[in-house]
Image (tube, rainbow, N blue to C red):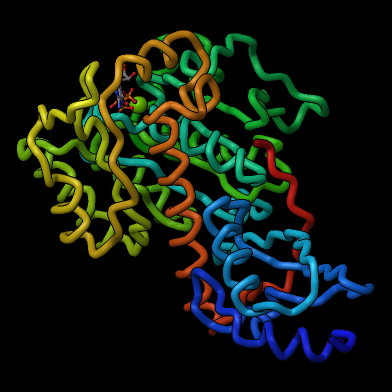
Length: 367
Ligand SMILES: Nc1ncnc2c1ncn2[C@@H]1O[C@H](COP(=O)(O)OP(=O)(O)OP(=O)(O)O)[C@@H](O)[C@H]1O
Ligand SMILES: [Mg+2]
């Protein structure tokens, strides 16, 4: 057999479609031949995150396209994270995506979702920050096991705390006493939160996850008016009684033009010791909310005692036991979320993988 040429390889790869955008990867600039020496073929692929699923799909498609061409393929991965359309007075212009984790309802698992989503995004090689915006009941310090107070290097900006590779800030850190929570109510709280966001030295982030307080309330409302977020992740439980409040929160997002990125159904089912599935809270709630919202159901998270235990011990389940069923559910949700953000950006940006022209960076995956 004759020697394989670059041109011949490129012709074979021309038909490889991007697993998310379903357009030819070479045309999108998301697949490139970097080198060919003898049998050694080096390709460079650019994705919007370090998703194992996407990487496997690309590998499979590349192999299928190459058929029995006499080459051994190695792929170098790069990542380019979409950027939201931040306005001129944006408090966090270096933050590519702001994700609001919310629900109309209390106690459905917003904080659990926010914390585990942040960790799952970080495992995919993203630079992640997590802000606890729940002034009345901050839970992220407990869930992450941090008790130290943040400090400032220059007397101007507050350094976020770091844990498990995620930058952390809680508005609770800033309260000197319970009395502060009282006087910070209403409009003062709104402006405090906005100022606070901008006062934190986040640096460049791919994703800033905001854990919002319960309710359709004014916090989400004023945030939406003053900060162009990427969108909201709505958390619900399966039972019918919880849905009305969640519908209200969805309607509010629509009114404020906050894109609904997807729905997470938490406490969906319970697996007993022999692995049988019990839908103790009924079923279908997440799907109903998703249909009402016109957004994808990103995933269902089972009810498991480990979630609470690990949360209380200060090591969230995605960090403590990444192979646990609940952790795997959150990892799949993060994957689906990143895909959804990329799809929306791709459509908005007229079919470009990196509409803002930013150079992709080398992917470092932490798993
Ligand atoms: N899938 C799950 N399995 C078991 N326990 C869970 C699960 N999700 C959340 N929990 C537990 O339920 C409680 C409420 O969760 P969480 O604090 O995340 O809810 P929340 O919506 O943020 O509440 P709030 O409205 O008070 O902010 C916590 O003790 C948490 O550990
Ligand atoms: Mg909470």
